[in-house]
Length: 251
Image 1 (cartoon, one colour):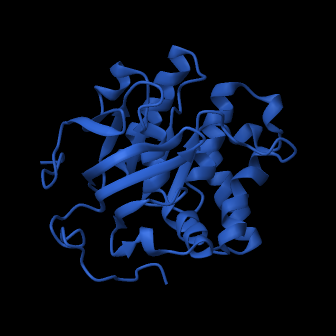
Image 2: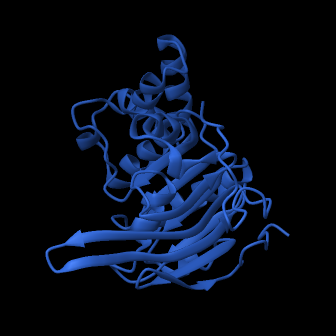
């Protein structure tokens, strides 16, 4: 269902590189009272499996818009977004939601945990939504993920009963619920102290070692400098790319 192929674009977005995620001529235009606002301008970029990508730029530069387009949260105004053989830009809204639940884990700066559910229930939600596991299996898997991020002893607490760093770990466990190949993190350390932020970064590094791909938006240049592939965005354009199209950062 989600490995559909469309005809190759004029840029050959489907076949030109071995990149897992490919954005070609992506533009995003928002309509405002003052007129059209272009938030992404002809973005062309590749992401490879098993790499840690850092995206930096000033507030309003287009960082969050880029990852929202990449993850199918936001429609492109024009251009193409590919993940593997799936033309994300061609998926309708309902299919895109299910595709995202299976293929992407999303970690937000504000955690986005449901306040009235326990950590265990929060982590089980994506599995229940996508229907990939039986209830007993999803519970066991959720407990395993909470153990992996070292907060299994808090499984039956609601989010308000634990620290911000522990909530972020729970959010990461939830993002990994359906074993997605890609983890997208929007300012995941922005609300954390430096020590806790470092621990979250180390956890991401462990996930990379396990074969995940992580795309992280951050204001922290020091954290971004430690990633394998770095992008800088200004005014909706990529102004720096440490690994241009066709250049695999793993080599």
